[in-house]
Length: 100
Image (cartoon, rainbow, N blue to C red; front, side):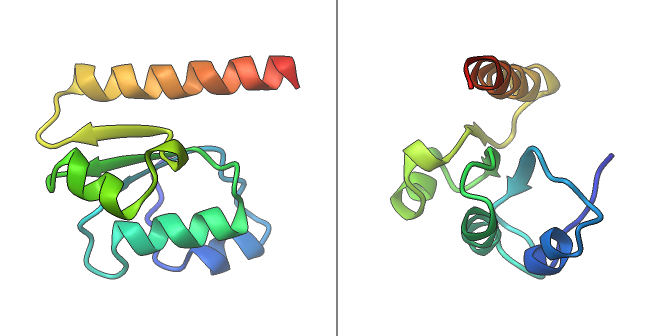
């Protein structure tokens, strides 16, 4: 299911949606990806977030710590590249859940 979140606080606090993984673009019209990232991490610090950007990895990691980003994919990526990032993040989640 794909859901556009324009107000992360409303989405998380309503209790209806359980978010386990987020894939976001940096350049969005209502709320930019940096703001969305910060708000989601405030609400759920352990939430894995994959960031997509056409600005380049260096610019993104200058504003968000690389350690806080679950995955980073540069535009223009193809399906296989996104699938590889998603698989790596989901696999790491599975390992974390088994260990904890």
